[in-house]
Length: 161
Length: 167
Ligand code: SF4
Image (cartoon, rainbow over all chains, first blue to last red; front, top):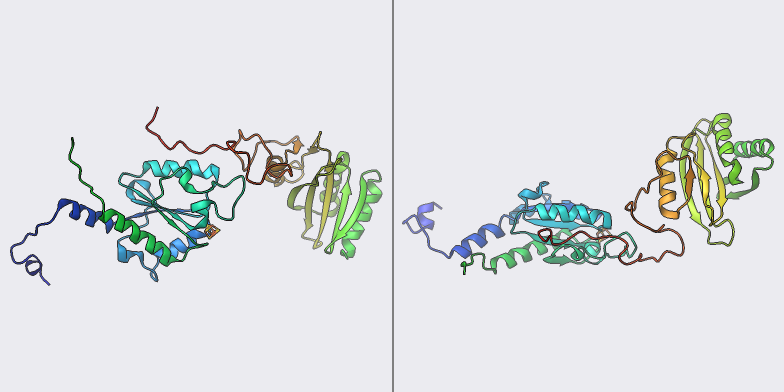
């Protein structure tokens, strides 16, 4: 279909700026893979060809926090590691989102011991928690779609008072 | 039953160091020598130099939670030439948990001994780098001791600052 037809022959369309920005943001969520343990293997499957996160615009795992929008914390996190994770998170540009993947990242899971932070929400603002040990890649896709849903329902533009 | 060749090694150690060997044991086909702490360095050196135990597979520690000789350090030695394995154990009391280092015999003992120090507070005399290996350096406890609570001591490990812009 040619551009002329989509746009009704006039070469333009009208929309809300909010909707346009949200459409762009929600379909280009570049993940920051924070693969800490076994869950990271499922996170790789999520990006791979079978589950194909590219369908949702999330195929580019960025290993630089400055180029990513959503941090996927996949695995249990020790107190020592938490400082590094928070540092990476602070380097990600706003707006940013966070997924706590699996029982361990959400609550500490079965690692109820002295070295493991009992849930990454102790030091990160988590948007979506995923249950499971490990969660299937579909669950991660679902979490991604929930974040897209969240973005589409927020007002990105604010008038300065 | 342990291999004949290991039993011969054990006999040789016992005849060379009559006071050192406090006992022997067998478990799951392995031979264990229980050695007094004052002689453990000599015994280990002897095993490496005379019996070709050039491979130190592991050093582990254990908390037996007993009144005397509470901690135990276990050396897992292998001879690749003779294809056998021997365990050397030594026990130390709670109030003076000091063992001579094995880093001058096997360089690889370095990190194993740091781990035993980190987890149990056993000091290895003469260790070139006696720092903690897993826990943060300012941590005050030794987490694998039996009296240490499973979930840790609240507040003993720091979480990152979640408000980086605040002064
Ligand atoms: S939730 Fe399960 S699979 Fe995921 S990091 Fe924890 S133990 Fe591993």
